[in-house]
Image (cartoon, rainbow, N blue to C red; front, side, top):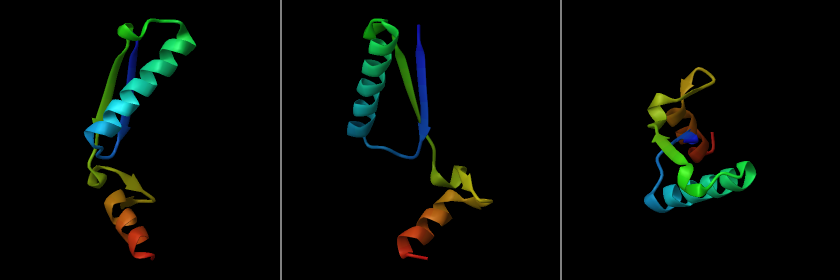
Length: 68
């Protein structure tokens, strides 16, 4: 059973459904394997669990929103 995994920040249900359908469609067409064979996992992470440039991503993004 083919397995596709994506890690990202928080998403709403519609975004997850779109990603799952899209990943499955592209992988199925590319590999010639029926869509029913694929398992897709979306792992959501809090922005405090990510780091960029030695700083928590939540702080980096907050500063970008403020225009700093």
